[in-house]
Length: 411
Image 1 (cartoon, rainbow, N blue to C red):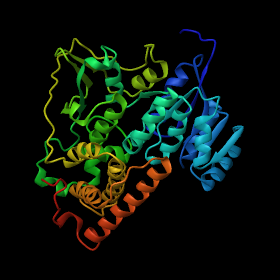
Image 2: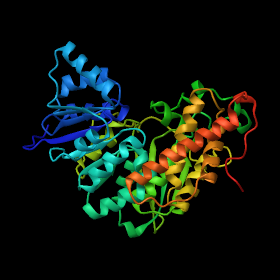
Image 3: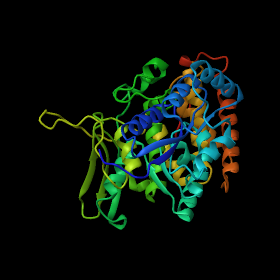
Image 4: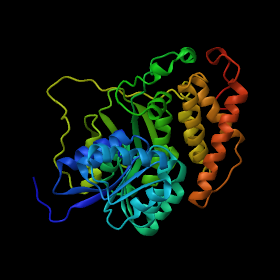
């Protein structure tokens, strides 16, 4: 292993999630190169306590005061010394992300809770590994504007965008014709559209390729996750929606492709292991040895590609439309989707009503052009309330699986 005289310290936003745990695995394998300055989590204080015992951060942050008191009790019971700074809430998240000691910020908090801390880190010119979709889906204009002003480095960790980042290194940006993002198609790729009304949360959570949190797994089943990735790609790589194409690739080996003006297509191919894009973000522009499975090219394999079914998965089309609309539309898209997914998981609405709820909220929400994170968060709150009201008026008192569903995308 190479030796490094200076250890880069990380602030890890979302340490107890799947990306956070994989990031800590990578850090553990490079003890002479990376260390942990701050661990920021939500309410999973049991796991956070074990992470503190192992990595000994200077700072630990949780969601709220009850979680903070519980964490303190756990650390005391386990005989683990408290970090130098132990705190809770949004201001503490921001302080952890913007601290001078943090040489790298991994943004992996699910939802808009991670937006403000990530924005402030970018505004200060930090190198940020972005694994939080909502940062760019809701606040792409603000975040990329701050990135240009501060010259911060924003390196995508999502497998598709990380793959695209690698492909873009093959030529000049002016030589790019389009970006192609791949989608597994989710668990209902071959399910007839008429049968989606009967889908259960358990079926939707059974993703064929990835093991992820509940919301992102449902978003993958509706293809909303791929719609979010289209929006992210537009901001990350300065593209128009028409220049981002989605293809269904069930084998999930090709993560992204970039087509250049001469017709050449460069693809990024790897096994489905998030430690590879995480390490790529940490070591960029270097490529270091990674502890991930290698593809066996001696084994016969067939990789297929097909267009997505926009009629069966209307949230993908709604995502394109929201990005074209601009302003607050993508923040509304994200907020309404989160409320609708929660309602589906709670058995309050059927699977197709997720898209119908998002569409109805987009139709009703007045167009705005937020100029600050505070305004974006207000849009988010208002859109969530509007989505809840739609669900209550449309579905409360009805049998979710038996009611008719209005079209999600208007002709």
